[in-house]
Image 1 (cartoon, each protein chain N blue to C red):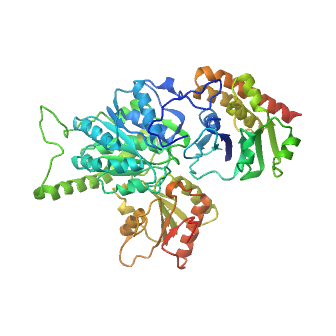
Image 2 (spheres, each protein chain N blue to C red):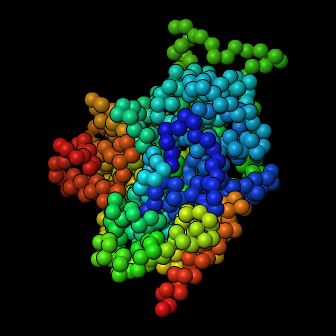
Length: 188
Length: 427
């Protein structure tokens, strides 16, 4: 079972990303998935969480996710206010939206325990492709590339299914752009 | 995302090109009369709404309350899209919601409403009007703590407090079971020997707001399983009769006797309905209660609701370590699966009951029921009651493993405090 935690701020679409990933893995990918938000009231701008579980067998576990294989941070300013590395498994992957280099990022934030760190300037991609600083589909593309979570085509199909037509096309582009950039990084 | 919503608007679209707020368009194109079974990735509330849609209620009256809101929102979208012919009433309170659907039920309509927590408590007065008058109404309750302390998160003190309202009570484990149980609930409620309302309880947030792969049956299959409601218990000029009457001391006992008989009949009808459902749709829930890996189990944990799914994973893991453990998933609190508990015997040495409620001055409600059902002189099975998961507190796999450890110690002859609070910050 893969367990994934999303860190965002209310209005960022972190839970939408968690849900898109689950939809891609289950309805389109033929696996089983579960997605849930941090339960309770939500305020715009406040730190929020999204969770996704993916497995090849039915998922019956309804407890909270503690340990995870992948942590995705939509806004790097959260690293100062939320324990984003909590429960990240030793071989897990941290994917963060950041314009910093890895050296600078590691100097700025305490993430010494993170072996697999993937950074992507998601905000630039979002501004460029979506003309809006909403990075959830961008970071979904990055995470799918970094941690092989689902087939990228299934993630596209999930966006087509869940979003209204006017938004789906651009968001698929954003997803692809981020996916290719991260894949290219891992080749170099 | 959910706020204690008196005024949550339904679909919101985000400005700009992003998609932080979701527009709900998933599967919309597929919603036609001749739709076939298909899979969707749905929240428990959305799955429940699909179940309700497939049952074609003619009248829905609802008042929104967290964490039920997205269920009734989705239903209002269905009705607006004319997915099925239905009159949807947004009423001013839960009391009115139940009064409105009762009025429609008096005309022989199939009806639906949903609520949660304080909403259910506010509806309380109407619950016994409906059950005493024997209208086959189906209600979904999104289980949530009752105030005060104010808390919008999940536990089962709301529905447990309504145990004696005269409603059949189901508790479910997953979004899929929510959908399936709603279909079963109408068939049970409308069975002529039962003619009793049914409350389907779905754990707040843990189920209502968790997305999962859900199979949505085809409309034709559901229509064949659940034909339109036919009842003589209705107002009719051709067949005039009095409904919701008053009965003095002369016949009040007899009226209650009939309700009790209906619940006894429901035991068989629930089991039969589940078997018929399994034949038609390929999913089985074992009627009033399921025994999971109990055959040779020395330690058994009985639970209600979504935590059953988590317990399953712990039982499976402990089994790989050679521990003889099992689970009883109680699906109905009323009628209560007394026979199943009464039949508990060796090799079972210890039975634990996990309650997401507490009856102050005594113990967890399910524990009381289970122990009373198991009682016989000289009985050797020892019992423990675990109070956990109140007001949305997570019940982790290690919490459950700890409960099995305590049961194993009890089975081995050690003393254990009978009433235990799991994860209590102070003692």
